[in-house]
Length: 343
Image (tube, rainbow, N blue to C red; front, side, top):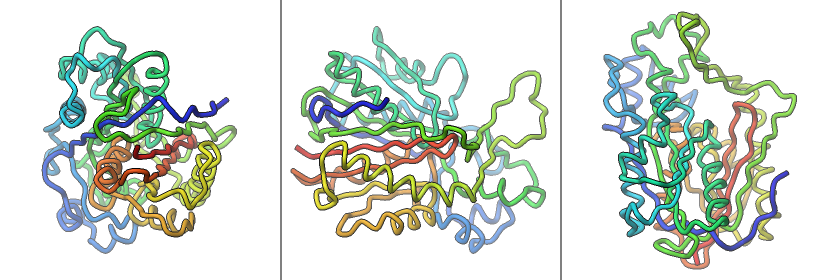
């Protein structure tokens, strides 16, 4: 059962993000894949994305640990806090560098964090909100400040050495849809730094009896030569379900925190792709609200996306203004979102 939110006790003090290398535009990616810029625009509408691996060779140049540690360090610096001030770490990803040690512990080590609980969540688009939800619970349990992170690196799932001409469209589109990145936020029990109160969080599994909309596979020793795809999506189910679920999340959050649509100044919509985000926002039909999106410039970075949106939101969020963030995970249909207020 989801809990009813206590409107006090968790604050967003700072956000930091990290994107690897230079942006890869559609012309560059199209030449590598043997597809046109028009094809990329038709399917996803995204203009650029970042990769932690070399497009020609597939060599990984930045790991997920690298990106998360960079984002975490930026968040700590922006909040004006030291490693000794942090009492927990929560990291969410669908693409850990290794199964063990966890990426979360490696990032904690890189940041000089020690003698504190470190959690790693396995999740997709909903992961950043799940990390935020767990972070709030830890603050409610007595912690004063903590670090929540999310990020993904696609190198394990996208093989540039394969012949694009032999890939089915539903697999090829993943090469233009996704990108790499990481984000972090410092949560505090008292208003510090940006002084953004987390008024509510929604984290609800909604996939009972429903086929998965997305599968990200993992190969072990016994099946490493399997021909099954690493990434598979039911795009028809995603296109049909996500806009409706986004509306549900928005209204459930408003009900939870006692706001009306007139109380919301900014909307952080789901960031599946530029075209899908536009469709979702149109379907939500919320007048007089400012949209905060990033996917057109960053690609779908999975667990990093809400942090990238928050980084764009914070300079625009005036005292007393409110924002609603909405995320939908189509893997097994998870509804997540958050309500923020600048105090």
